[in-house]
Amino acid sequence: EKLRTGVLDKIPDDVVDRLPPSIADRIPDGFLESAAANPLLTAILLLIGVLAVIGFFYGVAKSFFKMALYSGIAGAIAWFWYFNIR
Image (cartoon, rainbow, N blue to C red; front, side, top):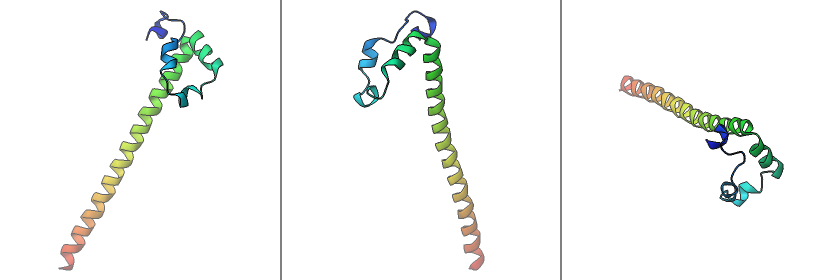
């Protein structure tokens, strides 16, 4: 939040140090400097990350709903077929 408002002009080193080594090793050094120098870039990347997470959970929920709907239809057909055979 402080990066967006301009109070901080670079990402604090302790925040970068707390990242797991597997993630920290994949971030290019120039990228961190660019993000620290340009808070708008940081905000845009943060927005993209949040939208990606929301999209993931939306896709999972949509797939679950479709599975529940198709299972319900299959159950209704099986129920109807079972009682018409007897």
